[in-house]
Amino acid sequence: MHFKTLSIHTGHDPKAHLGAVMPPIFQTSTFAFDDVGVPGQYDYSRSGNPTRKALEDTLAALEGGVRGFAFATGMAAEATALMLFKTGDRLIVQSDLYGGTYRLLETVFRDKGISADYVDLRDLAALERAFETPAAGVWIESPTNPLMNLVDLERVAAIAKAHGAVTICDNTFLSPYFQRPLELGVDIALHSTTKYINGHSDVVGGGMVAREEAWAERIGFLQNAMGTCAGPQDCYLVLRGIKTLAVRMEEHNRNALGIARWLERHAGVSQVLHPGLESHPQHALARKQMKGFGGTFSFRVGGGAAAVDALLRRVKVFTLAESLGGVESLIDHPATMTHASIPPDVRAGMGIGDDLIRLSVGLEHLDDLIADLDQALSA
Ligand SMILES: *Cc1c(COP(=O)(O)O)cnc(C)c1O
Image 1 (cartoon, rainbow, N blue to C red):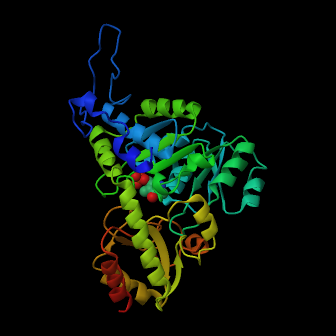
Image 2 (image 1 turned 120 degrees about the vertical axis):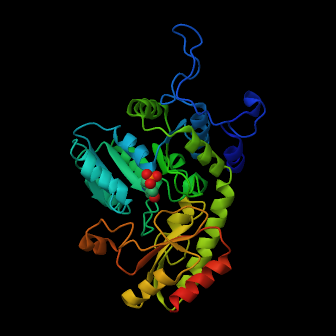
Image 3 (image 1 turned 60 degrees about the horizontal axis):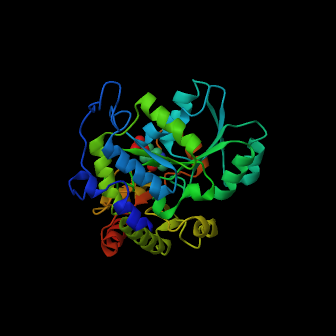
């Protein structure tokens, strides 16, 4: 079946629930045993809950994996994924990645003996060199945040496999509607469902989907042992969000590309970083491995700090806020907001200067969004 159909019908059979077309929220911590020593299908909600199961089955279907898992947050999913490794393991990690992942690796897992070496995974020769020292895993993010660099998932997964390393891809930015890492050979797809998958800025959640049963079994064990799972109310909300994922992603994509093309012609803008533009250095790769470009991208404002300040203060339809992937449009200044914890010199070296703006383009009318940016940029 097609993605749109799967996103609406997977994980729930009305006949099993008094005809209810939406999955019930099983707000219960525990389940009665069938008999002495005989648990039913469920026994305790940390180990399994029917509402969570509906979401987990849906995530697995949409990513094309054997099993899905729902977590309390994207970071809970990441923490669980990193527990797949053991003391002494070394990871090769995309150098330009979500700040929270960097913080988790450096301030939590390094102490426990799981180390990360950061490599620009656009450079496959650099990846091969990194494997001269054995590595247990490769952590990928594509497109990267906020610079919109792409990683060739198929080739990176193949190199990692040749070296016996597991690949994990944070697929938050595109959702499985636009990118399916498991089909390209990646072992585990990971999400902050807080973003596009839920899409309504009213839940924090995480997800993981494994391509093969061996990894799924291990993730399921850790989810239960560590207790990082999502609660039933949040699972219900994420499931509801997923029902419109396909139509939302189409519209996010259309609006974002429309704004990117308009910004590219604007005299007050020095550069637009959007993989759907012919000017993006990896536009061909975007067309090859993505079905769309998503709703989040960045651009650089000319005219110095005053112009950036005016833009951020004058926008009315865009809200100055962190996060992304919701129905409402957000504007972010990475240098002072999402990426402020990176030391200024490191940040500048990465290309996250004070002139960089990130947009999460929502589902408002494109003309209103462009008019809003126009008045704010012409201050
Ligand atoms: C937001 C985000 C996360 C973390 O997810 P939370 O739900 O906030 O814990 C991880 N990766 C990416 C790419 C994100 O955007």
